[in-house]
Length: 328
Image (cartoon, rainbow, N blue to C red; front, side, top):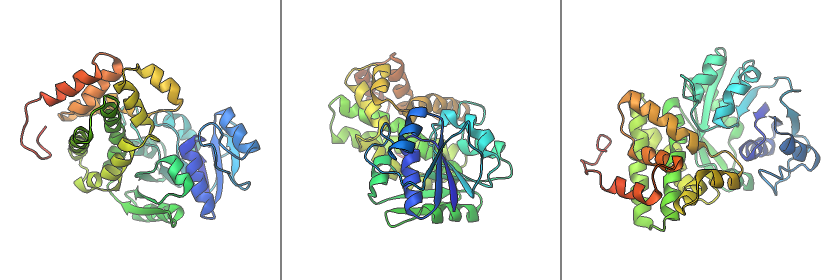
């Protein structure tokens, strides 16, 4: 395959490394001059993914000077930037979305945004417990490729699948995408719990209620529960909510220690998708009549209108209801 990876951050670079190791012709197309310069000259993404050599046969191009071409385009840019690269993507017959987050417009799922802009393309969403550094290291993990076109999902699976990266397929695009997006918000809450000094009991309870919250929003839009109990849900949530490699966990941990959001984000220096996802998710939940108490308090803490410790007691003091997907 000839694959264009859109995005020169840590995630795009890690995926390009996997594709190159699998024997595909790869080019990385981005817009950030510092990362592109490092990739071209040093063959290393010294800012976002240092320590990994990018093979010489991986081309590196600026999107302003690049032309679309190849068998597949793989999107690995922040969700807020997806609309900016749609003109470049629209000529591809196969578009794979590895970004995790919601779009700010009337079409909130990235698969819907890309599908509307590329009506002749097959769109495949890729999600799972895939921390960029570990993927680049070749640490074994899995992912799921979801599409309404089984053949397209199989093609993406075959392109990415290797000894250390096992890829499954699904047709529940909404479920896989919503799970991959909302787990970032719950991971912020998990980091906050650790930053406050709470223990494993607290975190276990938080993750259990978090997956419930994720699934309730997914079911409200017609997703299947299996997607939230599987790779894109439980699997990705566990990795993101427990690893110090996770930007969203680090955001939450910083907030839990009393630091303001701006300071934490400046230190991380990269996009943490859960920050913008929380607000969009709450708008979706309001329209669908779904209660999302964890997402709500995470948003309030990030805005500075609620202290992290008060957020915990606010959740603990809610009236307990029957356990299950309808219980909140």
